[in-house]
Amino acid sequence: MRRIAAVGLALLGLATPCLAGKLDRAVESRWRGAWVLTKVAAQSDCSGLHTDNLVSGTLVSSKGRYQFRPGELAHVDKVDVHRSRVDLIMSLPEPILVGYQDGPFKLYNEIRCPLELDVEVPRDLVSNDDTNGIDSVLRQAVDRFSSQEEAQAAKSWNGRRRDPYPANYQQTLAEHQAWKAQQANAAIQTRLDRAAEEASRLTDRLTSDQDYLAGFASGVEAMKRVELADCGSIMSRDFANLGPTPQPARPAANGEAQQRWGRGYQDGLKLVFALESMRRLPGCFIQAPEAQASQRRPLN
Image (cartoon, rainbow, N blue to C red):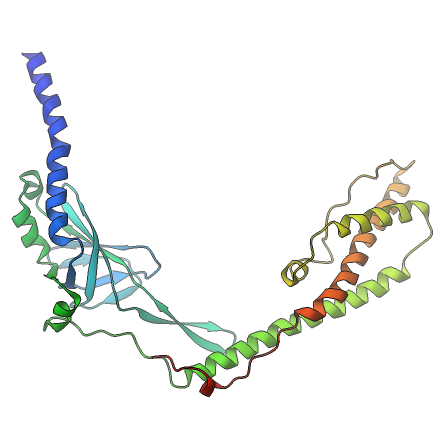
């Protein structure tokens, strides 16, 4: 008897995934790809990830940053059936306009807002493969339509559209680009001034000490091997930390000689970097764009 019971349990365990898969396909065939209007308030972080909204009847629990009123238009991208809930994973075709500050400018990004309605359903509906019962529960959270146009024609659509850009926003964008260019050019000029000062200082402190000159030559060769082909690689480096000081190839006789070699090595690094900066950075200046919004196509 025990063996028969064990075999029966094993067969039941094998059958459960098949039944679950059958129910998954049945629910998915009805809901995946559908256009819906939400009947509950929902939230989304609008961060590119689907924000969970736990739906129990008409109650919704979520920690999303942005809230959407009932009647929001959504597209069901995926459906997941669980033991006591069905997840409608959706995207909202209408973006939102989110402002952010960059220096003295208020700018805006259009952001897409995916969300997920995790609708609680009675367990017996899932265990009994009651597709119609599950359908009825899901319809308490959303109204389903065959097309976007049909959904937007429904009276329950909240009619939300993306907020308009502020007046003269193209002018703001042009002025922002000009300001960014000014900021970049000021940073380049500061680096050029620093490079000239370093080159002058390092040239003045050159000595004829053999240990210093040996280190200096090694530093020059080391910096020549560093890739400084683009503006970013120069601007991202700091005179104070161009690289560690290695041990000399031929150890000096005492610690003071090694220190002189190390100073020469660092001076060799800095002088080559300063000269290369002075040679390359003038080509990195940005030509500020003309702030004329009339030349650009307006944003809708």
